[in-house]
Amino acid sequence: MNELLLKYGVNPNQKPARVFVESGDLPITVVNGRPGYINLLDALNGWQLVKEMKEATGLPSATSFKHVSPAGAACGKPLSPTLRSIYFIEDGLELSPLACAYARARGADRMSSFGDFIALSDTCDRATALLIKKEVSDGIIAPGYDADALEILKAKKKGGYCIIQIDKDYTPPEIERKMVFGVNFEQGHNFIKLDADCLKNIVTKNKTLSKEEIDNLLVSLIILKYTQSNSVCYVKDGQAIGIGAGQQSRIHCTRLAGDKADKWWLRQSPRVLELPFVDDIRRPDRDNTIDVYTGDDADDVLRDGEWQKFFKTRPAPFTREERLDWIKQNTDVAVGSDAFFPFGDNIERAHRSGARVVAQPGGSIRDDDVIAACDRYGMTMAFTGIRLFHH
Image (cartoon, rainbow, N blue to C red; front, side, top):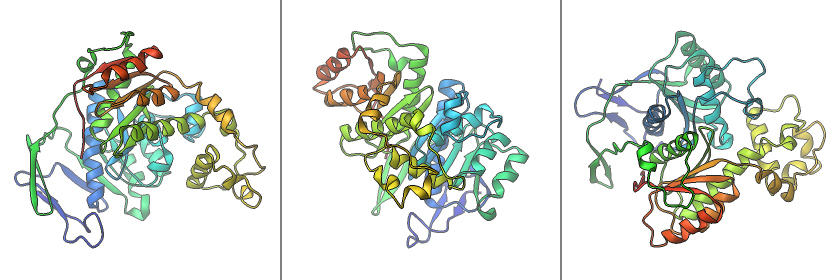
């Protein structure tokens, strides 16, 4: 099959809509449901991300995509008891490495992942499908599905859940094209391979990069390769903990990603872990309540008449000073940027969210200022020489 008709394009008024290849067959098979235009953009970008992440780390990988950028991405490292708690994994539920990868990817930014499109590097197994079953999601792409996993997924959305199978051996043409306003664009596909060699040019006084730090930096760069630019990504223990995508200003990317990383870390604080939620609270309401409670607008869920909707008893406020004290305990974070940092303020912001190692292309006229900022904190920074814009 070389063509697939879609319900509509980016918006319902944009008809007709289809995807097609000019020669050969489409590399995807729709197993269930009916994908939309944005679904397929998310699916094809997400598949490339997880495929490359697995190649770089050797671990099963997953990503949670929304509006053509990842909300989260991770490789399949085991979950600590704390992570199981903040990702709401039931006690005793056995997780495969692939299920761990999806739990981490979904858990990085649960607010943004609501209604995600999932990409998996490996055949979807039952453990992963059981996690997906409980989440609000639009669809999934994977190279295959175990029979029991497929039955679980087919039951989602009253049988309409979008399930796509990708040919894992597919290689795209060297030239890619798209049309905007009747004008055709053409460029070479971005086949750049991101591996440890791109991190050899260490420009700071601290020249040390551990194997784990190298892997975390590579994860951040691979995520950025498929994130709408400008973009900055914070990674810890093989998973994105904050992604700042699509901002016009680099510092805004760094702040956005850092704020998300802080939210991820705040969710692990005893104050949040012990929140006395009402028994019947819905998963999205719980996520939203945690997001508000850990911010400056906490009164929205703590004032009389409101807290009773979410909590059995009214929690004590999580003060700004208490939050900052907890955030200072986050360490060993890796930060990647898809283009150079033009000012040292990006390093200052990343440092406040636990950054220890940084990877960026370099090439700013103020590189010395950025390097000096890293040196103030004993951070290690590599210049990759590789820009990773994605549009």
